[in-house]
Length: 94
Figure (cartoon, rainbow, N blue to C red):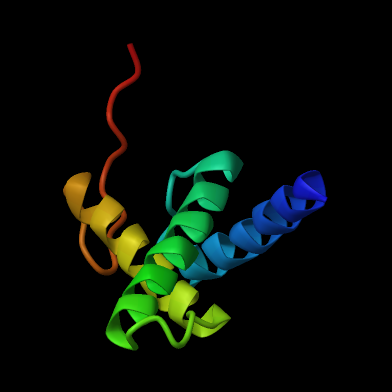
């Protein structure tokens, strides 16, 4: 049962991360795995925020996870020297 939950989380994370990348204009140089991690992280962070804000009564829905994922993609762009419409340059490989 744990394996199925992890697979579902990976698929939903990939879908959410991909839509978050599409929400901001420009091509983001993220791999498939990084996109999945952005979606999963966005969902987890959104769940924690909603859980704390409601005193533990509610969890986050998909849309809240999507919004936080868009914010994460934007923060990645800012870290690379980009902005809202410019993805910036990825760090150099060693």
